[in-house]
Length: 493
Ligand code: BG6
Image (spheres, rainbow, N blue to C red):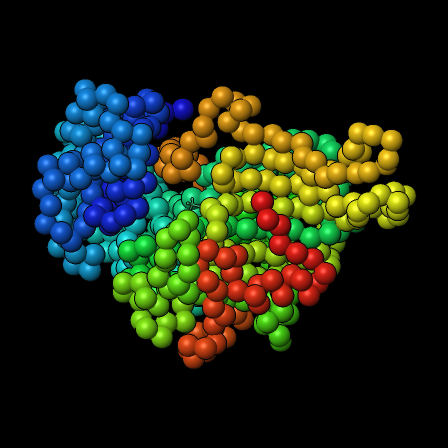
């Protein structure tokens, strides 16, 4: 389905997300004819850019971060629909100017009053932007006006509640699209298909057969040039509370009644409500934060986090977080979920590993080694796919076993690269489908779960209170202890 003609207004048009992800995704979608020719994009930011400059800047972004221009005629057509409108997020006159401009564009580009406002600005500006859009009457048509809010949604439970209140004052929940790009990734959606379109997994998907589940999102990059944002966010707000917890929800939730947005979101909220940090009285056993020190990666010396530009010398911002969750319900009682994410780790890898219990009695006692338990891995990055680890007999007279894998690779199976997560989500929003966006109660529950760790870390600003790890290693030792103390270990893919 191709959405109706509309104007997408991006606040934060001079930022990285717009340049690297949004514009390249929009252009590719237009090339693939998934967007109508009338699609109109208005960039808003404080800088005094011209339409022409914004078009040139966007072109560079497509060339550097997207699939390139490919077709000059198509580019020229697309560029005609790109506009720039400078403005200050806290000045009512900026919104009046924007409103008048959108009105003119509506007539010129025949966009029928359909508007999406995308807030790709620093999170502390969200409430102000929503208030101003609301007061300017730009959100008052629930059928035609939509609001996309980037993550993190708030910086803790109370600010998320305040933000939800502001949202409710100015628009209806059906107009709000809280974006989490992990929900746009194919393998993440494949989790639902694998679990609920196949009969063999669901009977095993519980405490009777599963020993524990690990969710890992490891990155090789450091803070890059984002210290301004990252210093006040850290890995918990940047990754755990949103991306990893969304993946967690889809792994752990009960089967929804249908694919309807609220049916799925209600199940996600239910599982979050049953979830807690493993031991809030002893955070060392349920929440570890770490920060990278200088180290070597691929033969290059990497500066430590505190030496990065824009980072305070005694910063205790975490670039790594590992957590252990327990879910108090019939399905998951006593099954730990270990989540970890970090920057400057040895490999970029995102995966969910579902480790099954060991066989009750191993008859191959004489085999030269212990059998490994079955592990079902969902690979989100690289090589999107699914892999099942099992034991097989090695050829020969001796009864020796070896661990092997059955692999499903998305690209090999379907002959296409999976599309960028932002494509899918932008289209869904323009079509009015909220399934892959988070609901207000979901975001608040996710904050509630991490609050004990967040409060403790916020209160503890002693530079020695954070565990350090060398860049290019798998995080601090404390994160190894978190899982090793339970007699388990992190998977190394
Ligand atoms: C973003 C975070 O939301 O996700 C970044 O702000 C992180 O810090 C990025 O690098 C990771 O996304 P992906 O799709 O590359 O795994």
